[in-house]
Structures are given as C-alpha cells and as structure tokens.
Image (cartoon, rainbow, N blue to C red; front, top):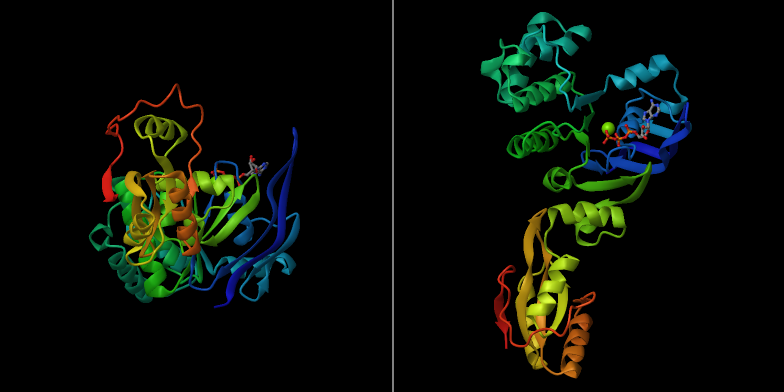
Length: 366
Ligand SMILES: Nc1ncnc2c1ncn2[C@@H]1O[C@H](COP(=O)(O)OP(=O)(O)OP(=O)(O)O)[C@@H](O)[C@H]1O
Ligand SMILES: [Mg+2]
C-alpha cells in the first residue's frame, strides 16, 4: 500500500480579534490508498480545518500536504484546483441544490466537467441505482428524508470518479438507524470502488462501523492513531479512552465498582478479552488450577473487525497467595489483568450479600 494523502508537520493558525487560534497543531499523518481513515475529536478539535487542508481549500501556516504525487503546498492555485476536482466531499447538511431534482444534483458536477448529455444521463442512472434512489430521480431534495438526501450527496460526490472522498460529519444530522445505513453505503463505496475515504466524526460508533484506522484529535493535535482494533483494545491517551468507553461498555465505572465491592467479598479483577478461541475457558482453567474461585460480575464481549473485544470483571475467591499465583500464571500466559482499586468503600462490606442484580453474573469455575 502507498499513501494517497500525506501531512507532514502541518499547522494552521488563525489570527482573530481575541488572539491566535491554533486549529491544527503539528499534525503528521498518512492515509493509505484504499483505506477508510476515521478522524475523531470533540467540537473544536480541528477536524474540519484538517479537511480543508486536505482538499486545498486552505493552506497550512506551516508544514506540507501531499495528495498523490502532488504537493498541494507547493502548487499554484490553478493546479490546486485540478487536484481538488479529484476529491469528493459530503457534508453534514448535505448541501444539495434545492432548485434541482435528485438527478439534476448528481448530474451537476458532470455538467461542469463537460461530460456530454447522453453519457451524463447514463452515469446518473448508474449512480442513483447504486445508492438505491433510481425511483427518486425526478424528486426534489425537500421531498427526501435526511438519509435519502445524504445518498444523493454520496452519488453526487462519486459522479466525477474521485480518488478520495472526504466525509465531514456526514451522519451527524441523522438518527442512529439511518446513520448505520449511510455508513454501510460508504463501506460499499470503499469496497466496490476501492475508494479512499476520510470520515470525520465525533461519534466513536461511526469509527467502529467502518474505519480501518483512526486518528484521535484533541486541541488541534493528533494524540493517537493506529488500527481501529488496536486503539479500541488499548487506547493509550485519555481522549481515546473516553471515546472508546462511549462504545464499549465493558469496564465498570467507579460507582459500579463501589457497588460491586459492597456486594462481593472477593478480589475484583478485570481481564481484557483477547481474540483467541477458548479464551474464557483458558482463564477459568488457570484460575481453577490455583484453587481460585471465580464469578463474572461485570463485563461484555463484542466484535470489532470480526475479532472479539471487551473485558470481563471477575470476583476471585480463595487464599490471597493462591490468587496472586493465579494472576501471575495468567500473566505468564500473556493474559494481563487489572486488580480494581475501589475508592473509599463505605464501612465494612456486608458479609454474604448476593450479587446486587445490576450486573450480569455467571458461574465460571469453583
Ligand atoms: N476561519 C477561522 N477563523 C478563526 N478560527 C477558526 C476558523 N476556522 C476554525 N477556527 C477555530 O479553529 C478551531 C478548530 O475548528 P474546526 O472547525 O476545525 O473544529 P472541528 O473539530 O471541526 O469542530 P466541530 O466538531 O464543531 O465541527 C476552533 O477553535 C475554531 O474556532
Ligand atoms: Mg467540524
């Protein structure tokens, strides 16, 4: 694979009445040909500014931007326009022409590019068929739902066969179900046409749904980037961790931990789930071999990129030395665990209390 987009130490400042704003701060990332890169961050993190730097609507204050073999930062405006025509965009507010029909919207960029009418009609029909809106060709945008409008936006962005598609909060105005449909369509675009896509979002669910790799932005910086599975499994920054937790509800919160500690006398230990067959039985077997009793008191396992991901919190019972030995044995097998620190357990924990019912419980091994 080779990089289609490359940013080298890119910064973008704005001088405003109230001082200098650094919207993008020393960002270096690459987007590989054919991949979907997700860029996630809270409002104001610099995501849209980053998009404008990639499609050459703006130039960085410093650093270099490459798209294919073109260094945007070294080209005259006329040549930047040529590069811009190879990049498709879709937007949160769809940005359709309300005076034109659905077909007219999709045909527009072809018209601008001077594609002859017959060829244009053929391409428009093909694209509308692809996005499932052939029957709406003569409708006007205001007659469409949000999801349908975004499908028109996607068809229009694809009309001139771009080599890169930028989606800036393309699903943020849609409900969760419609969001899933539009994301699935973008995934199809990526798979069937091999189109490289950059998806900008503040929703980790969108990243989980379609991205191959993710860049996490915070205050203009890319604070973490890597394979989606790796970032979800092992977020290394607070910002990434917070986004991951909005999707994976596999770890107990401090409040949940306090309740669990009250209800369970044993040691609470969280084990991140690994994507290997028989993982949970391996854990149970090693614990059993050390005479450690275990009950799952919290957790969840789900799938990401066809691999298992999640964590299980166990209540471990038995002699302290046995538990220590069991955890060491797990660690030696490449299965690390986290002994939960419970803040300020109020009073002594009540003896023999049953699990409090708010968490799934399951006997694993005794
Ligand atoms: N043209 C501009 N002039 C001055 N400041 C700007 C300009 N464009 C962006 N900024 C500032 O740069 C920072 C990043 O803005 P940007 O729009 O890139 O964030 P974002 O991550 O896209 O946010 P959102 O999720 O709300 O769309 C913000 O503090 C914003 O106010
Ligand atoms: Mg934005």
